[in-house]
Image (tube, rainbow, N blue to C red):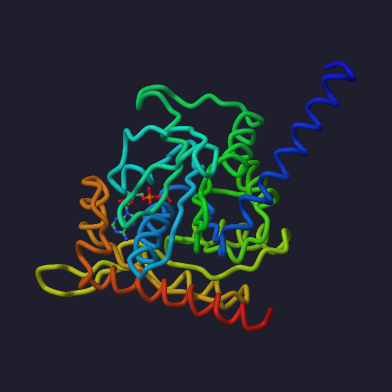
Length: 286
Ligand code: ADP
């Protein structure tokens, strides 16, 4: 790259950062949902929290940058919606519309088919994250929930550095020991970046037999609470295994609404209440 090109690129980045600041100033609360490893239910939790908050009357956006498993559109039943651009009152990329007027941006909208593996190199992924933050016309929102790829690699790091004013990070874990080791890393990573850890959610925590009501700890339980205590971060709740979560996600109907009376949906609602309480207290401290 020549000097001129480097200068041009630097200017572009500065412009982009200015746009990120302007867009993000219109969003009251930004929450990041993180997990140490994949498959523990991070996207399920993001989608259900988003719907629960939206149902309570908040304006909610979801940014799904989990490029290797962008499942938010599937869970919210809006796969196949394309992104559009325009220059109405707020020029930019327009998010797709999810249930309860949620606004959704997902890497999934950019991938051409289920069979094509994602072979984006690191800088491309970070470029896409930058562009989503700088150019998506979210408008005014109460909440932006960001579903990041698992682990503590380039993409979560870039997101946490680029997104100004993150209120807190919710860390999702499964009860297994392997999950707990990586949770320690995720908590350390968040603290290192000086972002508050809102709390840990233990997902897939025990199974209540629908026939006999007996509780079976398939993957164990209690590990999330233990590790939260050890690390001195809040424990939000434990969400049991419920096959309806899987079925609703496959169908694209929000579990938290469809099966509001289940112990899992009630646990989700308690997490939402704790998130709101955390933000209230943070607001009072500010
Ligand atoms: P991640 O985003 O961490 O990779 P997902 O949210 O995609 O994980 O969840 C992985 C799978 O586990 C999905 O099929 C989802 O429906 C299922 N799942 C998540 N949480 C639960 C739960 N509490 N009970 C039953 N199935 C669950």
